[in-house]
Each structure stands twice: as structure tokens, then as C-alpha cells.
Image (cartoon, rainbow, N blue to C red):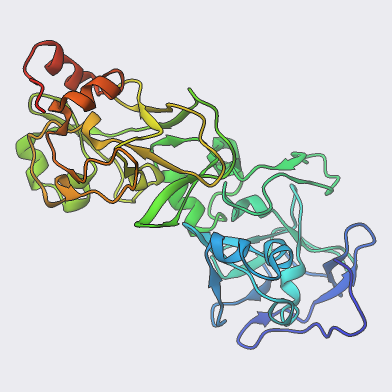
Length: 356
């Protein structure tokens, strides 16, 4: 965006901005941050550790009266959490106008502090790589890069952190959120994201996803029922039964996106094998991705989260979920092809007799 005479640009209180930085018109894409003097490698460019920031959910930004502005000046903080602000907020901190480059001369060494990556000459634009803090949920996803460097990637996808070579290039300089995501062992389609819904957090599609698309591939370790009982609640809650006394539990202590997939009695996704979830039909943009938990729960384990009153709101809602719902005739009639391999074997061997 371009500078106007009526706007005063400054520095937010409690944010340290190097006096070596100034705001100027780039002549290419609006305003940018420039070096008013030579800057040495490692020099602190700004530190906002003491800043009082306001954070927003994706829905709040999309529904904001100034949504275009809010999207332009947003960046990802965490799961469904963004920093952004109104013109009054943004213009109080010139560093909000720092532009992207695929070969930056500045980078973060913590979530709040940026340093010079290499020597920066007087008059040179100070730029950072947005992909070091933006994920799939970024409002800058799809941005066409104009950095002109030999390393230009062309488009900002929000999935750069998944690439091993990218992580090596920026080791120690990714945001803590991207570092956490990169340690997550499961795969998920980059059009999925977590946000609050009618009954709490859930997984939603940012764009239309066609039937048959692989949505998630789980990973985990296999443990016995006795071992499972000794695990913390998170591991017991997100288990898949894969054998008579064998369960797959998460590898990571961090709750991953697949862990937020909610139950529905008429789901739009299901298992195609023991670890892969695919779309059973086309899933529209902003539609919640759901599974029927009966397709992978045999009733052998009985934790607090295995039996609950259902609030899915589907026309065919069963009203409640019980851990042995896979035995129900209507559930098997509709969803048997999407049962986990272990439950399919139980049904085929008549050990999962149908009930009404």
C-alpha cells in the first residue's frame, strides 16, 4: 500500500526498533523498510518482546469491517491465531511494512527479535522470508514474489516449512509455531486448518476438496492395552485400535491438526486403510471435516471421551455415541468400507455382531 500525507508512521511503545531503519517507498510494491546506514551481521533490527499485541482468529479477520487491511497486515502466531491490526495499530510500528524476499538479509532469532542475516548496505531494503513464520493458514498464501533474487521461489505457499532443505537453510530461525509443526509426524492436506466451530475446535477446509482426496495420514507407535492405560490422557484420547490388544497412539506430545477432527454420524471423510483418511464426497470451502468415530473404535477401551452425547446436528444423528457403535446395523450398512482394517476383520469373522 502507498503512504498518504495524513498518516503518521512511528514506533509502537515497548518495541525496540533500530534507529538504522527507516520507512520509504520501494517504487515497486508500496512501502518498505530501508537501512539509513550500514548494518552489521547479527545487529538487532527490532525486538518486540515487550509489545502489547492484539491477536485474532481467522474468522474474526474475515468478518472484520476492514478485512482487506487486516489480511494484508496479518501474520500467523499459532493454530487459528494471527497478529493483525487496524490502520491505527499498524502504522504505529514501521516494521509492519517489512517486505518478503526468498533471499532475505534479515531473519528472526526468536519469535520477537529480528537480526541482520548478513551485512546490509545503507539504502538497501531490509527484507525477511515470510515463509519462516507463515503456514498453510496464512492470508499471504499464494502471494506472487517480486523479490527478483536467484533463489526466488515464485509463490509463497505456506508449506515451505515442510521441506527438509528449507528447514536446514533456516535452522534456528523459524517461528516457534512452525518449529512445532515441523516436528509433527503426521501428514495432512495443506487446505485444512483448525478453527472454532459450533461445538468447539474442529478441522475445516479452506478451499473445496474433491471426493477421494487424501486428507490425513496418521503416524504413531503401537502399544498394548496395558501400556496404553499408563499413558497420559492425550495418548489415550487419540488412539486407534489396530489389533485385539494393540493400539496406535501419537508419536508427538504436541496436539496435531488431525487430532481436532470431530465426530459426525454422517461424516464426509473416512478411513481407506489403518492410517489414511480420505474425503468421502466433495467438501466445500469452510465446511468442517468429520469422521464417524465408530469406524475405528471397538469398545474395548472405556475412557471418558469414548462415550458422549452427540451434537453433530446431522439429520441422521444417533443422539449419542457409544464406543461399540460399530456393531449397529445402520452404521455397518453405510460405513463398513471405511472401517479400520481391524474392525472390518471383526465384522467378517462375526465377532462384531450387528445390533439394532
